[in-house]
Length: 118
Image 1 (tube, rainbow, N blue to C red):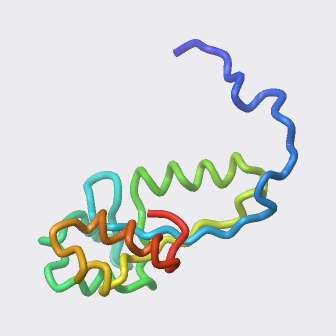
Image 2 (cartoon, one colour):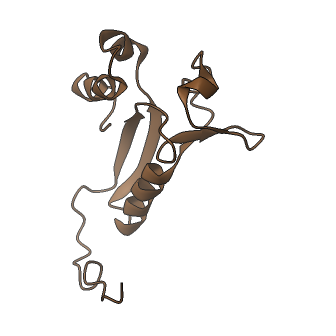
């Protein structure tokens, strides 16, 4: 867009949160924003691809997608102020409490103190 990036120029490098580690709940698959990539390179983009939630609840298979790329960029821009973001699934209890909204269930996990953000 031929503009100058003033955001990152001249910013005081003072730490605000002091090396924070964040845990984030991923409420659902949403192409291309949130997905999982299996070891064989297959992408899981929808619940139809994972009808029994086998992959969704498996934290050994990492989440990925545009939203996570964006968050990882923020971590890099923080210069260590945000140390790490760990992405995980929404709890089964919150999903049972809010069966009609996976996103509300993820926010409930924040309220319950299970994760820092959704």
